[in-house]
Length: 207
Image 1 (tube, rainbow, N blue to C red):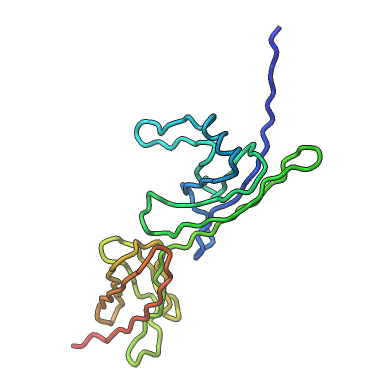
Image 2: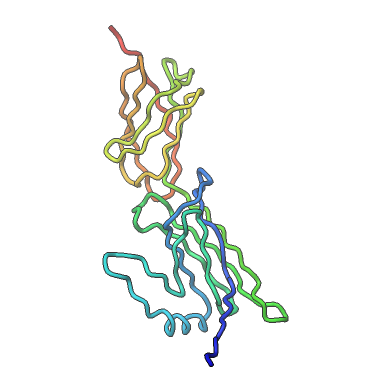
């Protein structure tokens, strides 16, 4: 006769990673946790997995990746205080990191109390208004894009635009609209996750 050992896992920490500007879920975010000393010992014992060939991600007890719907979770953690950290290493400086502190505990029956950690990651962003002569009327349907990297948007009926998920540093924003001269605006995004406002005036084409 074969004896079966049934292991019941309990979710200790769970949450969702979203874009702070759009509210949409972000997939493929590296989520890691740092916890009490007893958890550190568990990582040493159980976290022997290594990165698979070809750069394929392999989960460990102290790290995971967000799914397509932005969800992530950690199972069977010892009680104690944890710091949950989110980063997007494969996207350079397009997002600022995010973190949250949570406490893992159990009730009197030993059942895990779910600790929620929803993290909104702030993308590096440029927003503003594209205006016509006299800097009053917004220019609708103007194309606004970052030269060389391709992030783009169209202005709304009021001339407002939003470019999100841009690499930080010195960038050139290009604005093109029918009946106006194309405008190149130099911007400096000082750090990942900064949200900068750049209002851009256009002049009419002549001749």
